Length: 145
Length: 359
Image (cartoon, rainbow over all chains, first blue to last red; front, side, top):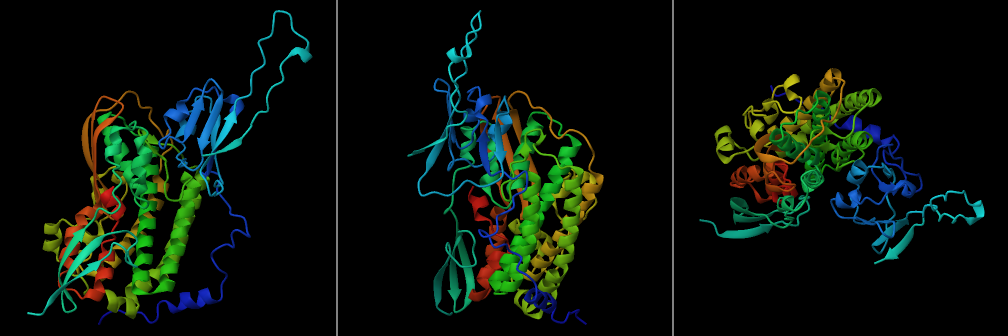
């Protein structure tokens, strides 16, 4: 005789009827991301040496490095979060962090400018007031394209 | 002779997640012939290998498919490791095996959900995908990505799993196994599901071999062939036997896939219990020069990878033959003689992945 089971799904259906939903009520409840989640790339621009390895090794070509101007630009909408830039960075100043980037109607890039280093100290140390003031560490600005 | 008519099926169809087109030749309601055509989502990813650095290409080959992404990365990396004579550390081989088996669980659960959806059993579809979510969360926690993992590299893997993570993974596999039992019972014993699948699209053993079926399609027809038995990654150290069924119908294909989920869950636990300590990556120097051909068992069946390089940064030729490519001829054979209303379900039972097929 052929083997058979009586209403095998009934138990699951009844259980689901009286239990809480499995899904969360996002966006009212914040999403929880694991520590390793590859959401977006962040740069510690003060440590960047503008070597350009990240730009050369970026599969979709989302990163641009301008050595003369000391800028590091990323096209957030082109980035595929593969993490290759963080692997090749010699100064380890690039990090891939949890949390997705925000949606937008237009593609835009984000530019970070390296702070200008203070001039090399003269043989006789100058007064602190004479030293050039450092620029802010991170100056992200949006350039709509 | 009844009047013949041609009904187009796809590329847009409610049961098809991906575009494949079939010209169905009908006599009344019976299919007498089917002419498949693909080419709607071709992206030229194989050609891209000529303009991308060979290390960078790992991230591109993963994007051939959203379900078999880990396997594609693995196949490509293993080819280059063979060409460059790189010995992968044992821990990396075990980690690759664990991720590969997790991919199989997530692919088969996805397929079960799609099958239930095609039959109109919505709650069973939701249940299958609820379980799949647990595996996706584990992927997110261990690799950093839910679908595209980016952990394979030439010479090993990029990320390690600590003991806590391995223990958690082991617990999750047990939870899934427990939750999967009622779902498996429903697929295998529920009378509506059984009557929908039994005796539908029978593919005999000889026909399956002649038409070149691979993976669960081939095993459901009674051929005990599994490319994992070739012993790549850490499969040599693990104990398992290919799962087969004799009937060769849609029910047998469903049964094989369900049993493979249980097998994969036990393989994950087996690999966790045997995983050695040590490095996860072997440094790679220079550029590849030579060619290599290899096979791996993707969730959908055997996939073939071929790489030819001539000492430069760019690879001359990369060829990838995916399981769906091999499963289309047996599918056409199966369709002959079936009812028009059964076509969507039969197309689904080969687990088609058209993005993979067209690359």
